[in-house]
Length: 483
Image 1 (spheres, rainbow, N blue to C red):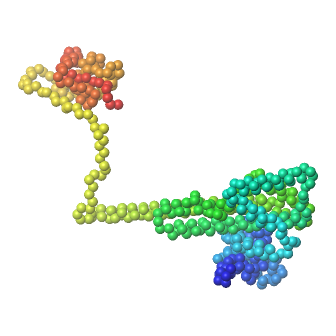
Image 2 (image 1 turned 90 degrees about the vertical axis):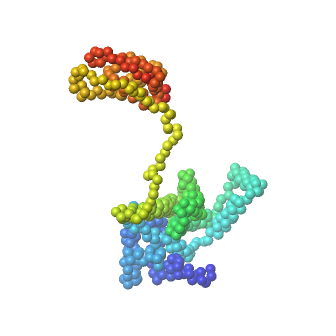
Image 3 (image 1 turned 180 degrees about the horizontal axis):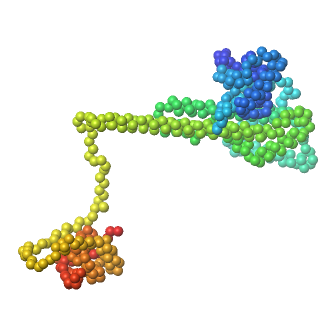
């Protein structure tokens, strides 16, 4: 509270500027009537402008038309400017209509002025008891000595047992009217103060979010390191002291049992004669519902800020990817530019366009090649008359049919020779069919062609002539056959 800090506070703090404003009574009276008294968290611009216009009309009736010359919309724009900052203007999600809300500094100034009103009496006793109880909770909650804690619990147990005994005897200590009023006024002040604290909670969340955004905007390292720094405690907003305190308050308030308990306690308190003499605001009967409404707005603010932060990080990733694509497009454009006129000399060398993978286990086993033996015999010219049309008759041998016959024969036996196969399935296409069988055996790793062994095959052609051929021994096997 030195001179320099106070001078800086006078220039920059919105609450101080509000108290020094020329039209401070008009501004404070309207904002109290529009926001604080009915506990309105936010208001749309048309509704707020209409209320302000009515307020200005009533004041001009008293002070004259020249007292407040601006229109309601002009005053609202002036109050949300950076020079004033008495209201916050924003657009809710999925809405194109601006809304207004009090800033924490404005509400603090209004509460400070409200404290100037003459009070019936100061709740000194209840405040002292609250201070004493809070100190007890702090000291006992941090005591690591089990013996001391047990002793304190035993002391409380003795007091509770004594109270139970007096209640059984009909001795019930009661609070007098002054004590009831004292505690009720302290409760009301604290309850209304909680409503004002929620705006500060929201503002603190926005400040934390702004700090994180500034950190992201000025970060020069990798994204992984940035995310590790921001979310080191799972969430930069929720892990703050403000976030943990609000979470504890919200969990306590969200209990249905506690809400019912608060409702019953408030009804019982308002039914007391000393409380009715105070003529309290009827809105205090549902103060816990106002807490819920204000808390929901703070929750939505936290969720919205977290969502915006995630979207901001996603945008950063998109910009990085976009920069990579721009570099790739630049390389492609440069390649197209020199396509017709490549650089002189060797530009780039590649051994192969793709790697050649050759696995040892995929190599087939060695099989010696079949070498046909041709007898050197003289060819004698024949004198038989053969029709020339026979040279043009083409014989088609279906190798798939022959493979099917081999598989069918191997279903009942492990192997079969070509002679047995021909005996089971007679030759239909003549010598060409036998050549096809030899071709299949040469391609099949499971088949064996034994040049040392011979086999004679017989068949009947289309004219009924009995023919025969001597071939090497051919054996088909189903061992290690290919699917």
